[in-house]
Image 1 (cartoon, protein in one colour):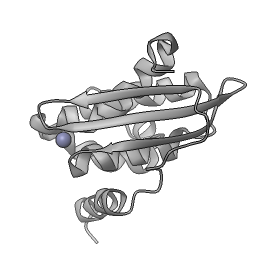
Image 2 (cartoon, rainbow, N blue to C red; image 1 turned 60 degrees about the vertical axis):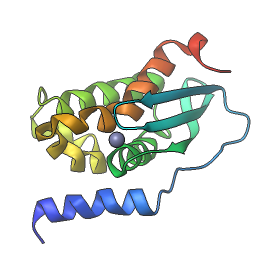
Image 3 (cartoon, helix red, strand yellow; image 1 turned 90 degrees about the horizontal axis):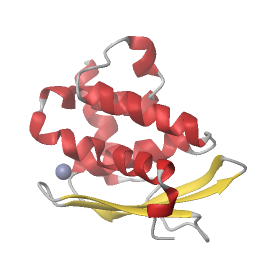
Image 4 (cartoon, helix red, strand yellow; image 1 turned 180 degrees about the vertical axis):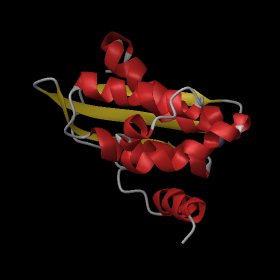
Length: 147
Ligand SMILES: [Zn+2]
């Protein structure tokens, strides 16, 4: 299977069968992220225990790229410390902007690396980074959250 085809299937799979689109019990952090240019609208909720993201989920709606991206993100960050999650968000955004291209950094993103091609689709950049930007904002400024 061609790599691009495989990537498309990963994105499709997360969009059609999201695993992390759920409410979680008594979240510690909640933040909404909106991308008006496309209509993507997500709300993240995280449970933090001892500085580690113990559980996470999201709700909302939007295009396939935004939804698949946030679903993959949540997969990646459960069990990570806040700092590790912020670093992953920086790597992801860097990859989407085409600023980070070295394989080692991108490998850390696991399945989310499937969105690397979005770097060549400027109109979709905001869709792809929505969840990651929202997460970074929420972890760095917990007081801005809705909870
Ligand atoms: Zn979108």
